[in-house]
Length: 376
Image (tube, rainbow, N blue to C red; front, side):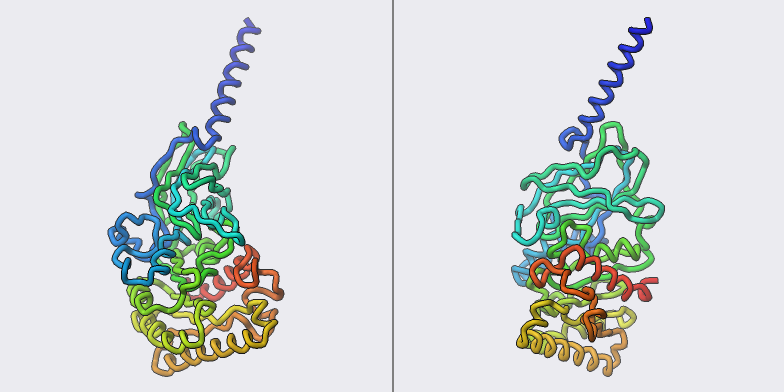
């Protein structure tokens, strides 16, 4: 009798173990489509209809054909967009369809095409796992052997590719809930919008949660909107008009690495004036050029950088004298390397320009401190 009971117990344990192991595989999870879940980081988030079928894109449908094609194409990347959800699952995975299945030699595929998961515990966000891409139709697991407590999660989408379909996977015995955004994000404050370059978009973070706009979001507990356009943050008038219409608590214009002196001369006044005039109570930050290593090793590059910074500051000073007191020029280079936002050394880039995770952490901390007093 005892042998039979032991045998039954062992058989039951083996069955449970086998089922548990199976449930840890991405293909064995049950999946939920996330199109109707709360999303962060979309400039027109209150009106999904503006985006047509682009649930995970950064520019509304009505801008197609009006913005330059490179800007439109980059706007289909999902940089900075995140999904909130809640589950008690012991394993969490995802399957997603990529728009391009894009690759670059100097940026990890996890940052370009992967998904990132953070969990909310004791009012803090903690990194939980990355779903690594494995094809245009990707399927992978963020984390296994979780405790099975009901926890809120935020999932960040790819930085340099787009998504056409996205599903979250959980154990068959677990429950899936929609998060209450107001409990996780300070919805009393409008988002902070960042307009800029490939760096703003996330090049070359190792995973989506490491872009500085998302770091600011987690640290300050406010929504951020990432309008970084690789090589194309050139102060287009149509982008100024669009940004001016978005309700935000602050706008950070960090686009100088994509702008020549002539672009600043031709475009800065209209771009900054339009955004600043739309809401005189909203701070607009004009960010100087970075202290890139190559710029400070080559005389010509250094001279050009200083010319651009000077003209950029003159734009800010001119508009402030006209009464736009919400405009702030921010010198992120500092007078010495110790004062630079990117840190006291040149160890913050992949290729002399684009940031490593170290560079993003330093920039994230810098922008968090800069924005704190405006987001209380």
